[in-house]
Image (cartoon, rainbow, N blue to C red; front, side, top):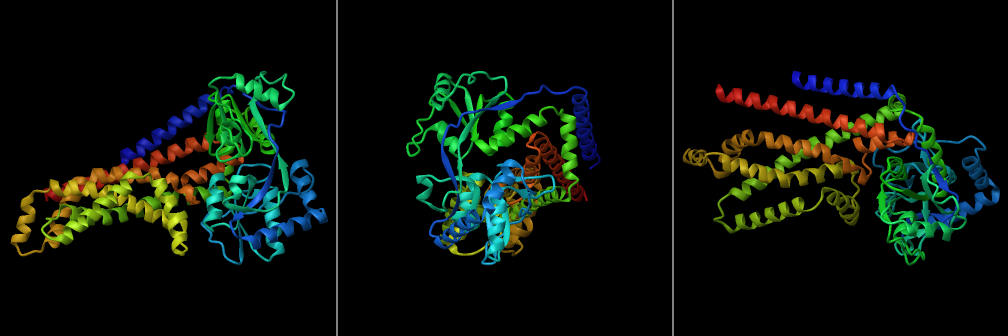
Length: 523
């Protein structure tokens, strides 16, 4: 344990040294700008589950009412022109199932001025204030879920959210699967490039920009996945976008990461909605003058807010909880499967069980865990009509996934135990199952302990996919913190450090257990 503490301290000292070195000199300022030509014409609307006409009609009626009263124009002026006091609302950090008393909104930050988070930990934006006003008018409690953009549709479709609000463009393909309210905002896509890029300076129309893009070969152009930007770059017949076969289109989870890649020189441009593009350009250019030490200071100041320190702790606890309980479930399932797999196949029942266990192992080892999570949470659970917290779903899926791997680990451990142990137990009159559970398996566990430790470490790292089902894990918590300043560098570095510390602690714990087992063997 002392060595682990020394390693952690050394890691912290190394990071402090890096930050101190970088703080002595400013990083190269790289500014970005938008090409001031609208590439598309589109309309935003709110998305609802197919067949939920009651909510669509109610929202349409409400939007007509606030437009007639002038309240909508006042909200637009507030967020686009800075007129009036903005109001923020809390974001749900646990899975909330929608009920008749709640109005559950699925959204995606950062997408300023429609939805974005501030240092106080609250979510602001035009969409959010519309949602809050609707909830108040209908006597409902507003619940806001901040999730990935493409996850909004599956959350709404599966009934985990009442409505999706995130600058969602209405198109014919989406209308086949979801219902939309009447459009409330006219939008367009714009191109973001580095400020020293002069390729588009003489462009005066969309055709000029597209002609320039068509003349470029193999350059990377980023966009947020599942957005109009992706359709524009890759082409879409329904929209009439021909796309650009000469460009290397790259999808990103959010615009913030895409712009970071642009600044780092990994892509040539980013296609993004106009209003969010203006907001992210201003924030990014403002942050460009900060060196790494100042960014670290901003990160620490953000953590001083109880909301952000709270979600970081919640994310850490959820990560550890899912990994620990997942491993426990995995050990139980894996041990039972291993016992069946190594049992003599004299009876038909054992042969059938062996085939079932083999199929189980094949399914869970042969498919990605993120696919297992999505299928369980968005397909299986809604189809059987039960409500289960996303965190509990994560624990069960991780446990079942781990069970498939532990079964093979345990089977190898059981086979490594001398066969004489089983024969001795049976000679003493013990049944096969009793001999296996009380004599063979305990010895097998000793043999496979290092491998089980590796499985635990793998589970810890794999928990980063929990955000796909709206669980606040360590990855999701640090991602939200990074959204406050439109800077993901420090949160990502901190994420790596925390995962390394967790791995060091697990490794130290495994070594302690190994030494105790070795000591008991000597005694």
